[in-house]
Length: 305
Ligand code: KIV
Image (cartoon, rainbow, N blue to C red):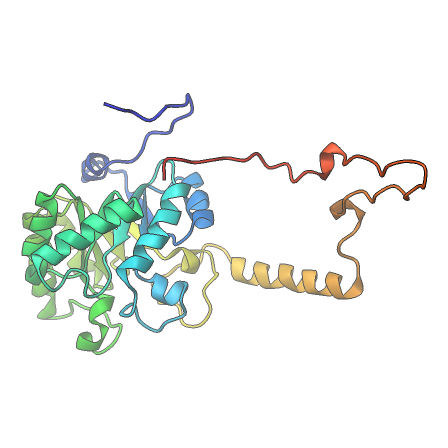
């Protein structure tokens, strides 16, 4: 069988069995979202275990107010870009609205496309008991599945908004949904916007890792949207999204400085300018380009993705 050439610095990928083995190990799973190659490289370098190309790209990248219009083609495009930036982290691709709800066959087909066209290593879908059969069929096709219960943003209109789920009698439904996903073969489950006691109960009763977002700290791992975590988001940010940096303000300051320097003529200075041609002489050729004139990033051809 053909195997791709290995370099001595190959990093070991986080696999589905690795993620499952974290359950009860005491080592929590760190997951973040990414939507492009540049962010993928940064989050991988930072040591996250799992990267989710979430359909939140509708809001984060496309400026939409919900995830509903995001298409499978758009997901595959962003997953492919993220895949190229990951060395270690496991890549999960979100199945967008109406790419899996119609039938188990549609769910298998869409999952296959995210694996083939998006270079994903698993897929995520929203819902519980009502999509358990879909999950089972995807898993049977050899595709690992991440479940997602609690606040399921693709159902925002049915839920009446982006609201905390699993309060009062609703707690039982979220627990039953998680159990149905485990039974169907999901290898971990995202718990979004539910009370911490409900998340703790689910984490105790299921044998697969739970990954919380707005679900307290009893979960086996956590996920955040990378732009929220970095302070790049503008407008409303949910209560659970801790901002670990303020890169948004740093970006505004840096770009403002650039604008000022362009307007004043301070940029570009000689440090950012190639050497001028020698003054042309009637009796000789202009000088040859110096080595430092080249845009000397090596031409790297990644034929694998
Ligand atoms: O789309 C997304 O980013 C998500 C996370 C919030 C879990 O589903």
